[in-house]
Image (cartoon, rainbow, N blue to C red; front, side, top):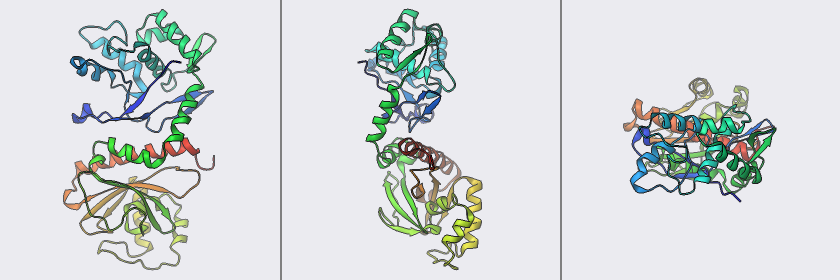
Length: 350
């Protein structure tokens, strides 16, 4: 059976001059009108193939392809090259060209709104001979990775089985740590994941980067939700009436620092700002000298408690550019984990 390996790769080379490591198997399937998305579909996609050392730069340039535009990017690179490659495969100099071509074909069929494609269109888009396309399609069809619908090809049911097998082996904690290691800026920081338990947060996982800070709480510990960015991010996801109900017996709040919210009215005002901003901020409200940003995971798990992720760092390091980069990475982490949970369990109420 044809062996297909498509890996997610958090490639920051173009922006930061560095590259991440390989992550998990990623497949995006659109079968019978339904779209099944991988947990990390917004990251860059790399089709891995051994590359001669003297051609590593060219291979890296060509293989860093957008998940949603793999074929378009290969065409652009081909047209802009001084030595035009004969096909998508020759640009990579793959030692397994059949696998590389198959991966490119599947990536093409997985493009948003691409629909089924005939051999002629596939040949044109991938710049491969029609005979090669016919052979690749036939092999993929036998493996049920694509299916032939009236002479046109679309993604096949076997991809869904492979995605399900992958998801069954990777839980949200593995995904959390793996994604934190891949993200350019969050990888260097202290990152937490927590759930909302009544009016408390429960710390579920923590990633330690090179920028270590001392937090008053560890994994398995609870903190008042109103004192943390994590808690406020999750509370902001709730209806205001539910928030009020949770705090109906707390007219005043325990104050941890001079910046801690003192009552429900102050908390409600902050939650309104969080809903508008899209993320929560803890400016020394839990611990003096520390700042945290947090984002809730949207539509997570199968009806369980809300979850959120945060990054914490010294207030002395806070500046606009760093904050923007950390929030961007935090959004990517939250989206990745939320997609992972939806793929495993389905959306809430579904």
